[in-house]
Length: 157
Image (cartoon, rainbow, N blue to C red; front, side, top):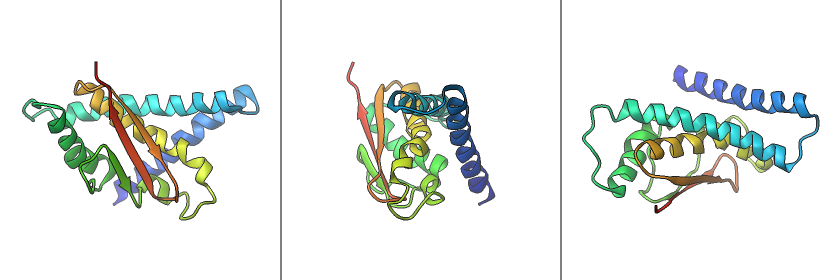
């Protein structure tokens, strides 16, 4: 329980730091700068996801196909990282009480702030998949806080 609170606090501070640091350098933020900040957070998450998946798959046998990889991500990886299991094995997963958004709001008043708090998580999943040999695009969509829908699109090479 304490680990969760520490991670949530660290996550909020990382987001605040990236936005505060970029704003002090540039002044007022436009759309291009906002997407740059989201990209920075997603990149941080990407590297964390690569490291986490190395540690979690150290003693696992090789995966046979994409389905085995997605099963591992949904059942084991998601549980270790976000402390809850994915409800359905699909490439679009809706989490009705996503931990990193519960501290922010339970309504619609901060809906525009959600992307910056989900960028790191999308990067974590994308980094894990990349390290397992799957290039993907991971997005998160929020219609009502703290509920969000993650979508994973595997890119065929």
